[in-house]
Image (tube, rainbow, N blue to C red):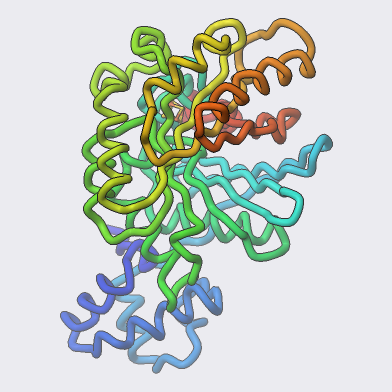
Length: 347
Ligand code: SF4
């Protein structure tokens, strides 16, 4: 049996395990320092620890080699897409996005996805497996390296539904934000869900300070049911109710993501329907243009239509961001991550 990867443990968990091994729990701080500050990839390479202690760790834990990384760079806007292959053949994609002054990364929480949203390339692949905390952290490290500078923000909007792998995602958040770990502020991390209501409620009661994004997709219940099978389990009204509860309990804003499907939900009437749905919620709306289905008109005409939609939401008193598509030439835009189709082929 392979020992568990030491990078799958939070510092608190590791401290508890060390105490059980007859060591001082505080030694977990030094182990974290070696792993996340100095980037040690092997127990022998951990500076400042005695050979006996390192041998003890090696008997109890493993340190999986970092996954192979393939890189694609957009000729349009410099967006970088990374394909990470793990030892068992599972794959996950991450994206590095360059803004005017900042750089952000989008990471995956699962290899594939079981949700089956009809507009999403990941959904079409099906589900391979959950990613472990160490595999999420490997994406963070790979994105940081590819960016060539520290990241300003991190979003869980890649492959998979983060709230269906919440235990592992939560651990990765704790390690990322640990001041002895990666020391990346929780306030700069956004986790996006298609609407797993029980976890939204759990997040409302937790001490985590991450941002929550909820993929409303569309404001029409019947249309939404056709776009995501998840709607059957968690109907839109329940999702909005849970999101409002989250805002009340945390005092934070929720981000609602609305996907503009050409000719299907992008009219002024659709915009007003969205306004009615989210009325009075402390929220911000992110408008994302669908990039899977064939579209009518030029990109400029489409953008003008999206802008008109945005204007109605803004006039309703809600801050709204119309996201410009990035990395379209390397299939790195929202809904396009498909790990080269390899999950479906079981490679
Ligand atoms: S949109 Fe998100 S939840 Fe839906 S299939 Fe794609 S990755 Fe899964």
